[in-house]
Length: 271
Image 1 (cartoon, rainbow, N blue to C red):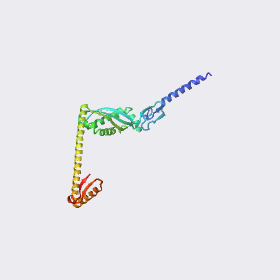
Image 2: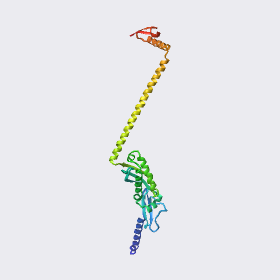
Image 3: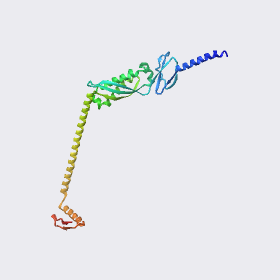
Image 4: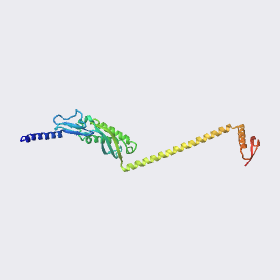
């Protein structure tokens, strides 16, 4: 019984030590994350192996694991840029991006965990200034907005593709012009719209007039053809047909055969 405390003390010490080592060595990587292993006595950042994936990992207590989010992320940026004529334009944009999974170790070694601030955002600003500088405020406000978004994406992608960053999309959220310039553009666009509407009315009226003219010409041609085809014999036959129909009518009337002009029936009375 006297020896029990002497044996129990080292055992408790060992258990506590094991628990501490396990707590220092255990690393849990969450969903959508990956870990970069840093070996204190083994050459630093591991770049020639795949990153540590999701789940529970045991590493030596003297090593470190840097955890990165590897799913798609979004970053917002407000920028002041100059148009082609030197006017200040405020551009609100966001970028969808993620680090290249297999190059996560190199990204950490060369760019650090602040790669967004050091690489991505400066690249977006540079591309935005370059692209917006090619356009006038009017183009930025209206017709060229989609084209500008595509161009900024392409230029930013060219900058970051060798920096272990995968750029998925650039979205232009808003383009803010100086108030006086915006009002002038809106007035001009309104005038152009009114001009287009007036031209449309003129074209519509011209087409309608042409339609009436064609219809009138068609009727005139039909009447001319009909007049040319009506002979005395045809007119008499039609008169006889009309007389027969009148005779069949229950209304009282007097019909004199052959008393009308050209020998057609003459109707003397009709009640």
